[in-house]
Length: 201
Image (cartoon, rainbow, N blue to C red; front, side):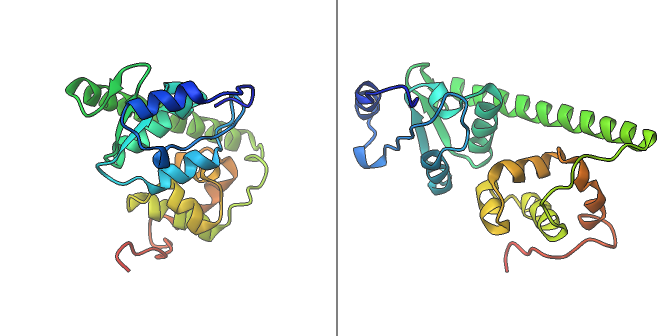
């Protein structure tokens, strides 16, 4: 709920009428555009395949369209169902499953477009001799581990906790949005790749 809101009673009542036990309800107080919410992050980390995440309204889950798409796409990939009471969205139904798949397609399209634009910008910067952005605090070992864990299907929250970076930074590394990290590209593939992560170890 927004930091400007004073009463969560309506939301809590709607969630409880939808069958959500009081001990499973998580409340965050955050500004309208803030994406880093401790309650939501903790909840996402606890969810497992087959669980159903229920929100009172879509904007309670994502405070921007891009953030909402990213979170819903993560739920889809982890096989977690999703319900939004106000918008009557329920992925346990065929129509809801279709919506999830559409969101996943949009998220992948957005990633592809971002990656393509980033590569084009980097190529143009190299051709003109311009520096590739300010140095990132991500080191070579973190960079390699992030990509290896992501390729192994680990959640971004798990990766962030493992490498000691925020989920936002981990997401940017995975999407290739940090220009200065291109110097580490040889660490994730080819003969110089660092064998740092074994999922079954």
